Amino acid sequence: MQKLVSYSGEGEFSLGKSMFQSPIKSGIFSSLGHHTEVYSLPCKRSRVTAPFVFNEEVYKKQKTTIEVLPDECLFEIFRRLDGNQERSSCASVSKRWLMLLSTIRKDEVSRTLEQKVIANNLENINGHLSRSLEGKKATDIRLAAIAVGTASRGGLGKLSIRGSNVARGVTDFGLKAIARGCSSLTGLSLWNLSSISDEGLIEIANECHQLERLDLCKITGISNKSLVAIANNCPNLTELSIEACSNISDEGLQAIGQRCRNLKSVSLKNCLEIGDQGIASLLASASYSLTKLKLHTLNVSDMAMAVIGHYGIAVTDLALTDLCKVTEKGFWVMGHGQGLQKLRSLTVASCFGLTDIGVEAVGKGCPNLKQLSLYKCALLSDNGLYLFAKSAVSLESLLLDECHRVTQCGIFSMFINRDTKLKSLALKSCLGYKDMTTRISLSRCNTLKALSVHNCPGFGNSSLMLFGKLCPELQHVELTGLHGITDNGFTPLIECCEAGLVKVNISGCVNLTDNVVCEMSKVHGGTLEVLNLNGCRSVTDASMAAIASNCLLLNELDVSECEITDIGIAALARAVHLNLNVLSISGCRLVSDMSLPLLLKIGGSLVGLNIQHCHGISSSAVGLLVDRLWNCDILS
Image 1: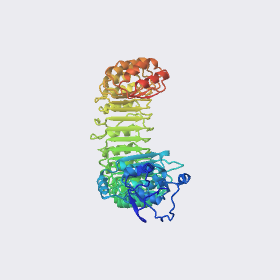
Image 2: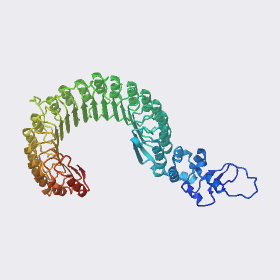
Image 3: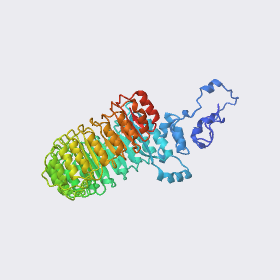
Image 4: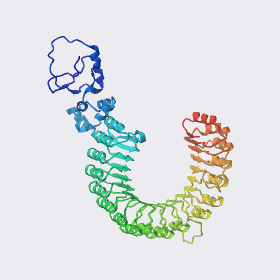
């Protein structure tokens, strides 16, 4: 029988020699390259001098493939392959080969001097590929394939793994494969992986020294050991996000703060083991680099707020959510700490410690604050907004959501300052808001461009007319679910808007009629780009005719659940100047198959068409629309 491997001396390597004399039999090794080094075990010469008799049955039973070699030998072969492409080809042969190749680190690959020079020249371009695995696709085998395959394509830069395959989920083995084969990794996101432990993440830290972004969510198997390893080996870390990792505590944050001097963004959520000491260590160490900080459901108190107010000298974006131990004193101390001079955006949600006194302190202590968003702040009242408005002269955007003690007086107190820079105002589900006669001396606000009011049942015609009188530069108006708004309140707003309305959303305002739409089309038809009339049941074909005649720039129109018919669609089709990109007539029961040629005509410019629940349009008509409007996404 032919020898499996050429032998050139006991214990030596044979370079570039074929395992088979026949070139046909040697073809099975074509994927291994032309200069494969194979180790040949020593054997004694045969003492038999009689001629060899070929036995075909014995030959068939004898294994003559490389699979007879143990893993140690295959490892030595694989690490001597010419390049990344050859290793990638070998990985596709079998699962065994793939797993072996994924255990080879870059520093274990045997290279010639020429190959080393080329590899050094390619270091600067490595790490531009991104890969994402979710659900059943998240397995160790796929990670091993990514680790081996991306090396020949520029190197892996970002990896995201979300969800877990219950049968064959991601384990530490998969992370180790990534660590060994993807040293260029700069971003890693791990979500809901129950089989990951410190062992896998520590391997990432030891091998991927270029790591800049780390996102960990619901990884219960890791502890502070992982963060310490990241801190010791990844000095370029700039973004850290940790959510629902129950074994992470202050010790891990202290290590990150002390060693990661370039840290810019930190987000901590639902980690009850993190307390004041961890936040204090992080802020004190990274005070000159940290610009974004999010704290959500942590076991912190007023002490942490004091540290933020004193050491947050570089913080521009701050979000505080569900900090139940923080009291009024905490927000007062934070505002008076004089450290948040660069703060531009502040979000506070479900923090009962934010009272009128606290919001006043924030206004005074954050002179450059431009955006304030408050959610479920039950103790905030009109007085707090009034005191805040007196000092927050840089504020450009205000959002109040479920702040039920705020009324009309508090909202319009934002306009008491003649130098106000407020550009956007949004109210959502503020059930305490009610129309009333305001007695505050108000200044005209020429800066407000956007007004959004959603599900505030007390917001009616009085408030709307007052906004129209005080804010003539409004361009974006969103009034949704407001049954108290009628034509009498909206028409004055239309007449007072001097700059020209650009985006209007009055969905769910059931008491508005064609009169408002026709008037708006005439006055602002030269500027209107987006119009949403969803659920305005009193809007009919008269509005469609006015829109078709006057709106020159309109590109998005939603008339879902309105009383329009085929006549209204025909009016749109006749408008030569109208170039709609998005049209929604969902739930328009009076539109039928007669509108099919009209929709085809309009569809020349459409990229989105919603005809859901249009029972007058048959399935055959829908099919024709789909076939003809191939460039348009159709919801049916």
